[in-house]
Length: 482
Image 1 (cartoon, rainbow, N blue to C red):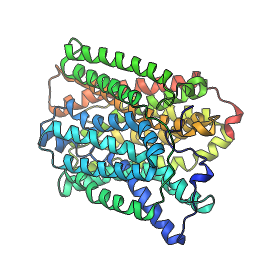
Image 2: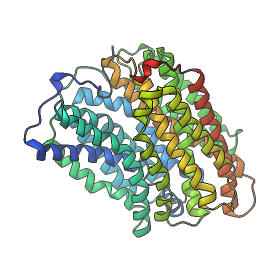
Image 3: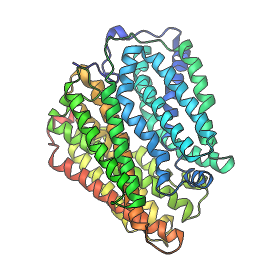
Image 4: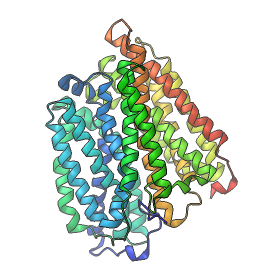
């Protein structure tokens, strides 16, 4: 039976310690922990607005530029479950400290990058650090805050950090790129990471260690398989389906992912417990968690390029252009718990997914002459509301009926599917874009817009697949309302 690779929602009493020092110390502990988590959330989007400047400085192709995002998300998503197991066995404060230092060091390397391959390597190492940071932060909150109002407050603050981090990343990336350089979007992590690493052993209590073994073979084969698959799609986007390297990439991906499945079926403590897929509802929800980001991450990538290279926005203005989506998402999320209690998970989920499909279909019709108000504002608002309605019902469905000792594994797998879905989806949409524009003539703005519209169409089909899976696989019952 596997040890949870991420913290359970109901920690053992032995791992929970009262926090000495009163409210002031509690505030300091919470600040240290959520700063580490916020740093990872910000980095998921902070380079998006800087992509055109990075492309110009380091000579990336339009299709190769997606690896600035993919390198990070592949390492992060592929190693996330293993990072949770490292925290269980080595101690979560120690794991978080190492992860923060790795993240800061790799940010320094990326900020100093003089070549494209150097930046991609640094982003990969950032993903490794993020995979060590994320699973340990929630566990340390449950360890350092006793049951009651303090823990509830800490969990409330923690839960908002992912959304705040993504939104802050777009704004911060725009500010730093406009006022200094894209390099500062990475270099800013260095002093923050060092400060968190110094504060952790001083203020944060360590968790007990647990006996166990690492499923390194599963983590490495899974990550390598996904990397080969993404690489193959990127090759197709630039060189076509007849490219030998693309064909070898697809073959290697199939072999590695098949090996990963066999390893996980036999491993005593797998990073991906296959028994979690025994439930029809949970399997359908995991498919939704995989497919929704697959359609959305690519949309953000192309919208960032369009806002700067077609609408001629500055990096700061491009970051501000995403604010309506963020505000719509935050406003919607506040009402979702009440909607779940009244309607159940499935109706709320299908409504949210339908809005996302509509937004992607709207973007599919994008033309070079469309301005922000006519072409982008409406889809961004629909995406914000749709995302706000979709992800909480998916989470509720995934965690419903999970045994307490597997709640961490189920949650960690949810995060993994989100990141890998986004990475794989971006590679597919970049492939569609590259195929559509390979022999297209016209102005750069027209070529970019027409190719991005085809990519948005592929994203609409992916979102439609998520909607159909949720409609026909997930069964809505009145018990969900609890």
